[in-house]
Length: 146
Length: 408
View 1 (tube, rainbow over the protein chains, first blue to last red):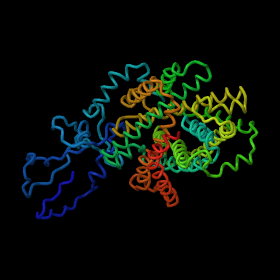
View 2: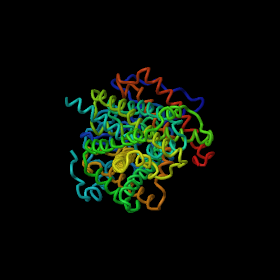
View 3: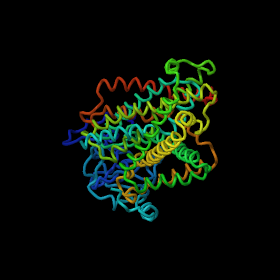
View 4: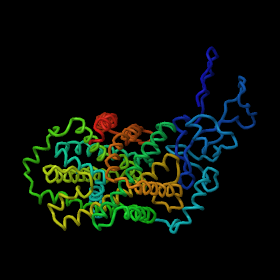
């Protein structure tokens, strides 16, 4: 997440004042539990994806960002294999990232609350697979204990 | 009236649920070798678990977040994963020990080899986790575990010389033991009283039962009254061993020696009761540790978890627990002595304690999670003292294990 500033470069312009809640990616987003609209846990925020704001061209990976480029925006919460690379280093190819679009996020508190059901999300596919192939097939697997 | 009953039930299950195979074995071993000279450790451990369980219960009630969610978030993925690996493996070891404990107790009751009881015990544990409601599971095993009071009854029936017994309670290294073994068993006893799984289970249980801030008073009473009384049971186990086994020169290496003093003091009836108690206590603890293994994994990775959901609604959580039980079965099938597994598991529990204790302490002071329910100054002073105790015990455990040859 951190980008060290090369020696001798011009200090960054101060952050412009923004309306609303300020979120610290490290403190408020990464490793937080994600709940769907029904309060069911979906995953943990394993990493974040940044992109160019809407209507702006993406800056290709590995190129110097020209001055005056609009600040990137948060586009998605990431999960899946990206956890492994975050722990052990490296970066999975973009096609392997499992994304939860930032537009699905309803609120951020001690948990990240989504405004959509987890049932349709890619992030929940392993849970659905284990449920349909294993757990639901054991007698009593669908019985509500309460 | 209903509230009063709830409090009484909570206290009783806290007492009955306090003792597990680790407490049974370690207290008997210590009693048979050191008399009551290590009893002060039980007191230190019980106060510690009260402070710790109270904090994690409060975090769970105030924020709705269970222990391992908090650990992952505060430590980040790398340190979190290291923590998960250590906590999970030690918990798995405890699952194995508890299932072995059920089987050993059933062997004593039936004379059928414990290896034949092990698959049955594991399946029974799984069935209860699969079908039985959380509160019923907790209350039934807790209440049946209360029968372990027979250790206290037996101690009275043995008519020991109370003055002599009391004079043993002064911390001192017995002549035939070395200082290193004394401190090694002090750490084992501390680890048995303060096992980390109790905290995973306690905080996740608070979420399972949907605790709110207003329920905290009741949980505090359960902990502050129930755990110390449970600690008294531990002392009675050690006391029985000190009265019968220490003079006879028997050092405990099997479960039959743990219950020998009860048979001598309280006869056949006492023996029947103590076997029921041990089965209930180890069964209850097997449920708690198996659930804890599911809780820790699910909370780290953000899976859906909890017994309040149908298994299909928490599929990976249930699959993880099934796998853990199978692994435990596999380990026991090699014929490894469950009592030995227990002795190691309590020491490793002490090693792993700071890993869970520190993140909880940090979050219990974080107003973002806790609002106005952050730790008070008094709690923090006690908590910091315990942080030092826990760190020292954790760092000293492995070197002492090597020096003493695991207390031999």
